[in-house]
Length: 156
Image 1 (tube, rainbow, N blue to C red):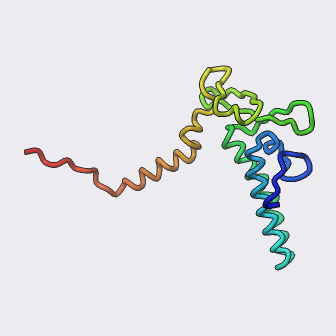
Image 2 (image 1 turned 90 degrees about the vertical axis):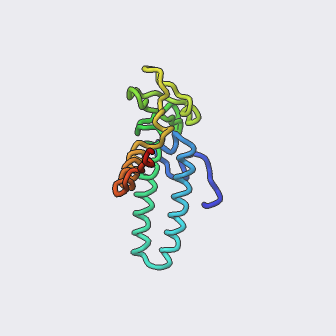
Image 3 (image 1 turned 90 degrees about the horizontal axis):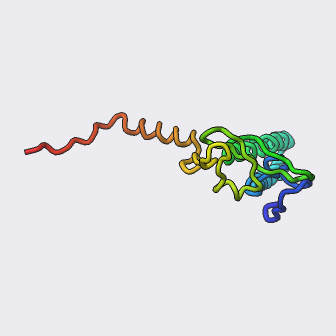
């Protein structure tokens, strides 16, 4: 499983609508699930209790990881499905006005312009995730709290 990575399908891998809508998220979830399955194989040799614990981690973490990756990338949990079995497509949410827009695939995300307001749909992605930016600003504030501001040299 570590070396073989099939594309999105309905038989192998983490088969959620969010993974079927985006090939990059499919690959990341496949990589995580394969590592967790390797850990499950080792833990079954140790004890059955550890095997059941690692099985719960596999189910919980692989599903949660996939959904959070999709939310972080597109700004929504929505997706849309065309006719067919695995024809899922991503939906992006405009950071400016909140309008939802359908995309054909993940390659349109970088150039998607909102149909309602005309802004880039994911312009906040350029600066990173909003929570990460807030934490970075908070850390910068904490690191400068005990310091004195730089003093200019006295004028003659």
